[in-house]
Length: 115
Length: 113
Image 1 (cartoon, rainbow over the protein chains, first blue to last red):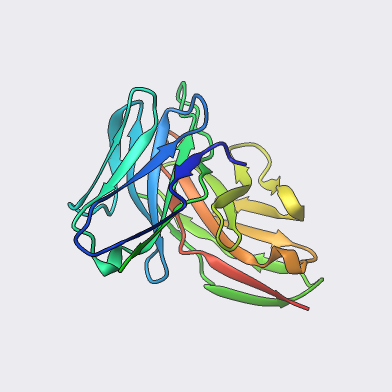
Image 2 (cartoon, each protein chain N blue to C red):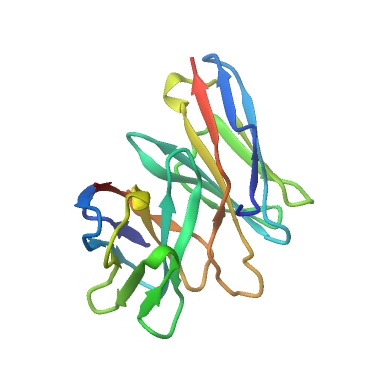
């Protein structure tokens, strides 16, 4: 158990809909990362938040948005869903304290299926 | 900018044989290096990491990796694999002055009996 919790584990929804994926980082971790994993694109970095602020942006579509709340949990919002958005969405967290870099700990992922 | 290249998308190997999974990176700054393993339908789990010190790093499940700065490589090795090592392996780098992780495209290790 990595200590990172993602809900829900599975999600099936129709095209055009909007969904919210939730992530609770390890206790005390300040950084949260979102990744998308699909068969054809591999593991793609979407976005990083650090202590409530957006820190880095990757290949995140404009239809997607994220936020990190004061209690450090994060949500990834996916809207106007398309078939191609079907993928595993991972959240990861790292301590990122005092300038000390550490490894990222991954959740079990949310499998999104758009039908 | 940083990038990671995993040269082999799939590596088939027989049980008890040695294996090496290759990882090369490019970076304009010093980096930390990681190997993660992903078993089917699971998240990524850290195998080992190199932050500083000895260039030979030992991880879980009998894996080790060697950091070679001149060749910008961080290859993963195991002297004798088991069926249970069948999984996908990801190499990752992170700038030492900034917490952001860049992943390779992954190598699927298929251990055959």
